Length: 214
Image 1 (spheres, rainbow, N blue to C red):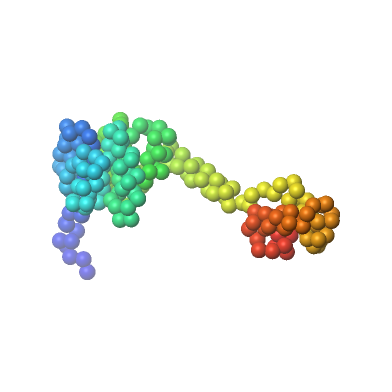
Image 2: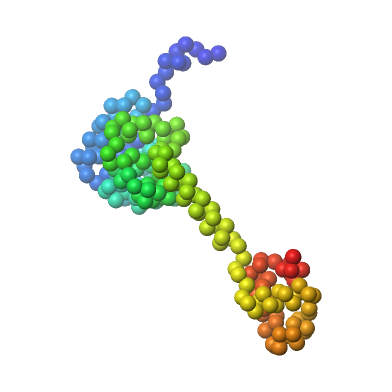
């Protein structure tokens, strides 16, 4: 059974590293976040190699990256790691293009340039709960992007189109002609017939004539 004092325990703190090139900005942001009971600001970093070194040493759960100061490349590097921290992009322009770029780089959430400090805290706590952070408009754009990528992958998975000559060969294969009969019907050399058949099987991703006809 739960003990009464269990309900009075503070929520677990999320370890945060603030990354930004401008010292006044990152230290001011770190100080403001440190006043929040559920946030443990473990340090700050300028960016690049400094940020990677601080992450390795301090092991934060969340990294705040200032996108206005060129932090997108750092986001990509962090998300390539199997067990890296989550990333919250701040100072993001409220445009589909920039937010989609952040999403594709691997951020867990973002805060726009005109957002309030309360918005930032809400984003941090949402990520701490394992929730993605995005506005309804951007969510719709992300869904459209996912649909576009799915359609692109489906198109790429389709067999390469047959040439006019290969379609002609296929029609004769459908009638059951052998290679020698194809040679006579098309008035081409036998090696050329074999090349056409090989290319057809390769494009259709099948192992034999019967599968190609089917």
